[in-house]
Amino acid sequence: MRVTGTAQREAWLARTSPPVEQVRPDLWSVPVPIPDSPLRYTLTYLIAAGSGLLVVDPGWNTEAGWQALAEGLKAAGALPADVTGIVVTHMHLDHHGLSARLREASGAWIAMHPAELRTLAALRPRNAGPRRADLAWLARCGVPDDAAPGLAVTDDALAAVRAMAMPDMLLEHGDLVPLPGRRVRAVWTPGHTPGHLCLHEESDGLLLTGDHVLPRISPNIGLQPDAAEPPLAAYLRSLELIAAYDRAEALPAHEYRFHGLADRVRMLLAHHERRCDEVIAILARGGPATAWQVTRQLSWSRGWSSVTGFMRRAALAEAGAHLRHLLDRGTVVTASAGDPPERYALPG
Ligand SMILES: [Zn+2]
Image (tube, rainbow, N blue to C red; front, side, top):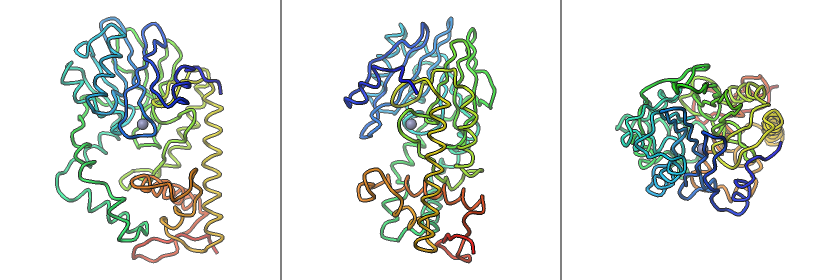
């Protein structure tokens, strides 16, 4: 791997925000701040072609975020009103949050993969349904009653999700983004979310990787209770797909730009293999366990006690994704009959 976004990397190490950068003659990267997050910013990309101006992942919806986006557009010689299209790699708040405001200011269309639309639609009902389903899932995972409310999706988070825009257009794998004069193709990479998209900018040989592949951290691959397909199997397949773009410079949505996608893919595949081995070792050592019990015993970079609040939910979802993967492989079996919580064990 070779870091190409050196200014971005320096900013990352210095814990500051990188500058707006003109990556290619008609392509800019713009850091849009994420409030209270160790990731600090989303890298939003602006791609111009003739009278068209595309924004990929507008970022988190705050006033500071909007100002940062406007600054980036200004560097590209544009105003928010000039934007003609918005593509989001996935529907998370740090990517899709500002899409609604940007569409309002510009009349631009918004595009995403159909699976992201399904997730947005499932979270839209204003009744108690989404939260009840979530608590039931936490119970199946073996989260104790006193810990469950701290892990469950909050009304505030649901309200923020509901405030996000519904798309005007859907992009399937292989579709060209409507940006005349430029070939930007959707590459479906489910895993981090069911409808995650990378974008291949064919003219300049760039791959916008969203959260699918980042240079330093491993994106959260969590079991989504409503996902059509087990996320880890999908993610591993999507990694192998993206290794074929090794010649492209990778433009991720966080951290910094780099070359060497195939290398990075190998590291991420090895990371998940190690994680699976760790789960097997926990079950071998302690016998049948719930997803919650496995989660607490996995190694976390700063220890389980430093995994707090909502991060515990991401950790649980990640352990759940690995357990499901091992279950599908036949390496792990379920050891409980019917009633929650579900327990997992090694066969025989
Ligand atoms: Zn993200």
